[in-house]
Image (cartoon, rainbow, N blue to C red; front, side, top):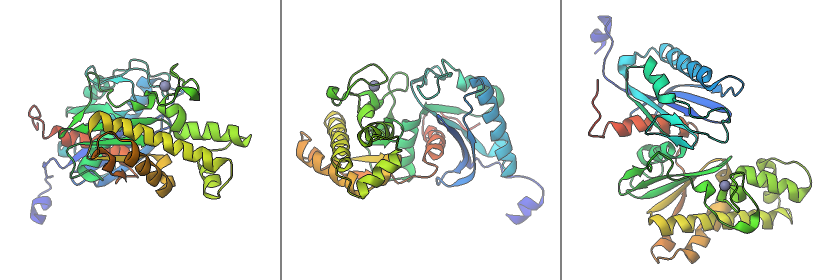
Length: 325
Ligand SMILES: [Zn+2]
């Protein structure tokens, strides 16, 4: 093998996928191997002051730089997976109108990448991508049926059912953040009353917690008060946990998963959340077996988004229409 390299030739075995996770504040780019290990990563701010086209050019430039820095040839890369916030249209390769990327209206992101790279490009919403990462490398490796839910700035889900990702007609399946949970909690930014993420996302906790405390506080600060046993915040956070339980019961009743995997910043509060949700599920899921559905922590924390995006390519390798060029 050494002498092979000494001839000055490079291995053309396709070992890596490039994962790109586009978020409202930052975009992570990574080179990921088939074991889910991140060989190189680069994080840049998602610059909302420039046009989406300019931002995509910047991402494309950074992909080239990363490959060069890691001494990896394009020939060694299976493809590029892109995860982006919804709403989007994966069939058309377009980002439609994500609330946290306000200027990104009907952006043909896949076509831009195809202009620069000859390899396959995969594109899904970020929660769907993260679900696939949990299936390949995380907390759901043995599952044929599970729901991945992320609770952070917003709430979203990735559905893996009957042994495959369920994406819907345009890639927006699992947009559970705007599933109505409790209309008495007021009107969500989407216009509907009582959406899940209006009640239980990190943004909601910061908003409502600040209201209770009469001063602007971050989600982290609210959870600090919760851990200190603050008399107003403890019942409030318990109410949030109960609503996450309600959301999980709806998912269990709708999809009959083997488990629900919870990820995202809000889940860092840990045991109190998982215990409260498990307790709620054990009481209110309709099916007796559903009441036993384990609610578990995501296996991937750091780099979950970009490993998820890269996983779309590893997933595509098992797809009958996928041919390695
Ligand atoms: Zn909503």
